[in-house]
Length: 330
Image 1 (spheres, rainbow, N blue to C red):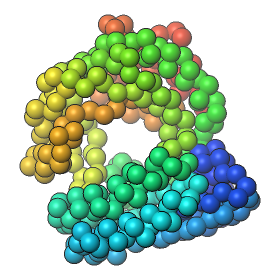
Image 2 (image 1 turned 135 degrees about the horizontal axis):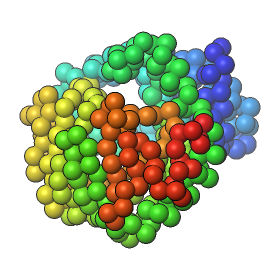
Image 3 (image 1 turned 60 degrees about the vertical axis):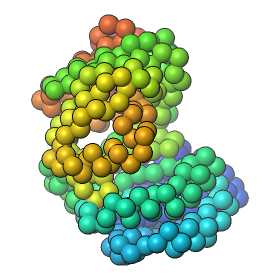
Image 4 (image 1 turned 45 degrees about the vertical axis):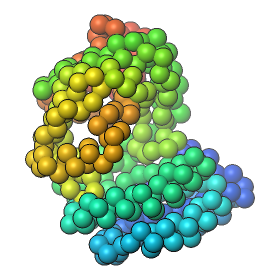
């Protein structure tokens, strides 16, 4: 067993979910390459005194089901799985699979049906509010390909970002939380991006490995109607089996009024799912010391709080926040 897998399993069980004696742990692993981690998780759960409930999903099998699923079928699945989920104390989800585009030919109406009648009732209404949960993706060739790296290099990067000292990170986040709590206006600038909004009186939450791995962010949310300007992405984003590239969003009074990408029609269908889809629900600043894609060679950028420059090209420039720069967290 790879020692890095053993270390990751310990982080997930003991830090993220804080499994206690007698607690029931739902372990959902997707893709055959996640089996080794699932096995180690079962060992760690037993070691912590918990009771593991493993469940496996194959993406190709799931795709076949989704192509022909019905509302009644999904409602029954949700009823059955919801009964089990409601008995759980913890949930660990490992997302693998060697083809990120496996569901790309599933009609949008079927994916939306699954979201409405299965995913939301089981996960949105039970798992998220009622369990200690953590979700992560598992490194594979398709992820490495999206990152333009070899699989070996991507695995090294992945285990570094997932198994760092999250306790140390949590302590270092405290000054940023206080700084954001007193901030009103935020401005983000970079290549193709100039965005302004307010975070005044919105709660600020630090995240250090409790719900997502890898982790390392402090998040809040914009005041709903305060966002104006343009936001451009220079990294690919996979969603529902399709990889979007060159995304550009234009905001006015909080709402996305124009969205373009490598498939502009498709991305606008996503934003038209419901009224809230064209509004932003979260703003976060990432601080994981191994995720350094805000450096100048990746385009760089600036973040201002109330017209004061606080971060440039991925580095904090305000003295009280320098504890969050990469060299201080590794």
